[in-house]
Amino acid sequence: MKLLLIMFTGFALSLVGTRIFQGEWNVLFSGNFGMAVFLFFTGAAHFRYQKGMAMMIPDFIPAKIFLVYITGLIEIAAGIGLLILSVRELTAILLIVFFVLVFIANINSSGKRVNLFKADYTGPGMNYLYRKRLPMQLILIAWTWYFGIYLH
Image (cartoon, rainbow, N blue to C red; front, side, top):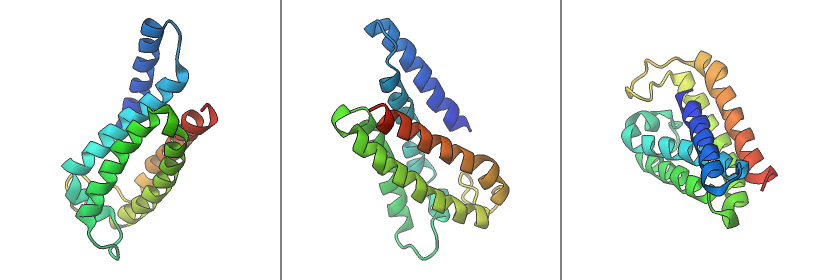
């Protein structure tokens, strides 16, 4: 849930910044900025916790470390894409699809009790998936839809 706090903080700081520097509250930009900050943090985590993230991927999928790096780059690129008006809506649509696919990896990792940070099998399991990860994914999808598609 720390990541949601980062997203909300990015949103709030951007909102205040747009008020100070533009003279008005730019909710649309600030919402996308908050998500971009979230995506920069999660994308960077793919390079720091690559072993744990590779353990999240279902066993039948090859080249796990490569896939972890690619998805990290995708997250960073999506954060940038949300800040560019001409590609924002397409980025948001693809990001929602990405969030759904990532949730599938979260189901797999929760079943295996993967601890992302330690790269072992001491994680919180399915309880974490339903109590924290699913609500967070729904918030991310709704946020992306609202600021990237609906308000666009």
